[in-house]
Length: 439
Ligand code: ADP
Ligand code: ZN
Image (tube, rainbow, N blue to C red; front, side, top):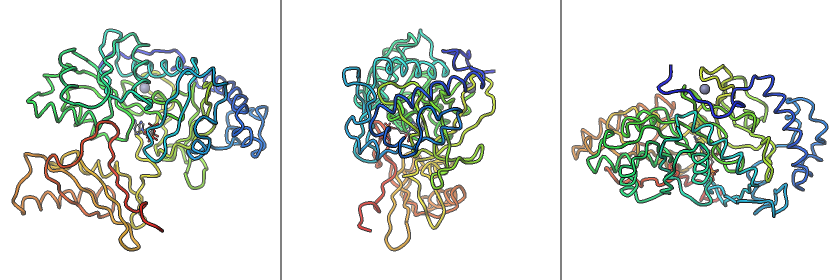
């Protein structure tokens, strides 16, 4: 049924709903107790008039206060520790995509839990102890590099901790050492594919068979493109530093959504405006509560990431609810003449147009009272022409495709090959000029 053997790392991944829920409830109570050691949560719990004893069923989670990114910032740098500083084994930070970084801390136990979570999704995505894994996530405060590194080691596979940058050298290492598995952001994989192609290397010249991508939104069309160019099977994994880092959820061989590791995290999907749960299967903001974290438990952390949840059984046997692709962050959502648009929808449109390269930026401005969106997209070298009429046809096709997927018209600008900056980690695709202006 699958392209490779469906192996399961941990039997907790296949717990029955009943067993899973009773484990979740016991762990949720412990988490609330632990969180009450932190002045911030103690106050928030007091304001919400909840004590650990009030948590009698999983539904009682809705009585708990929510936590947002600003709570992390206001307790900068390490005000949310639930354990003494001497129990901390490592500190990481969010990449600061949307402002000042926030720090997160791990106990020894947390590091072990985290490696196990990564080992689960890596195994789900085909990793074997005999594999060599090339990691080009940045090693540093960003949770991607070290998170995946220890997950790979936990499985018993070997790691090449290449870190990010210097793409020709990455390709040389992948080829010379013979890595079967690539770990990176999807946009960086695209960059690798492009540089390889420029060196005259096709998919058969690279030893890669599997890839694990995460850290940024990407579309199904992007998966198809990267898989073809690098000759591998690509898997999606999701996480964020405030919750633990990568390992919150990941795809299995069915590649139809990412199984949330529900024995370690409770996930809710809410309407970001009303904060009420969305209807089953509808898109909403994901909210996570950690169940096993020691150093920095989180209660109902609002991720600002929008996705939907699917509770249907999965052929792989894992019972964790599956989350769909992240369609975007609430902060990246564009509201154009009343229509909500995510950058990922624009990517979807661009990748459907032959001749458009998968390299683009979206600029938002507000010259008057309305938002104006400009999509600047590179033209593939083989489709680039100095004939205006040829470029106009491509321009109009892109325009129509964006309109048909998003329902809005944007300004399309074609850019010459190699003129849009390539990503070495998380791609910065949305440039919002509105924020810089006084209101
Ligand atoms: P920052 O919020 O500063 O980028 P992190 O490094 O913790 O901090 O990144 C976490 C964020 O990255 C998530 O909240 C999400 O927006 C994004 N992300 C991570 N993995 C994925 C994925 N597989 N698909 C889409 N977005 C992802
Ligand atoms: Zn599955």
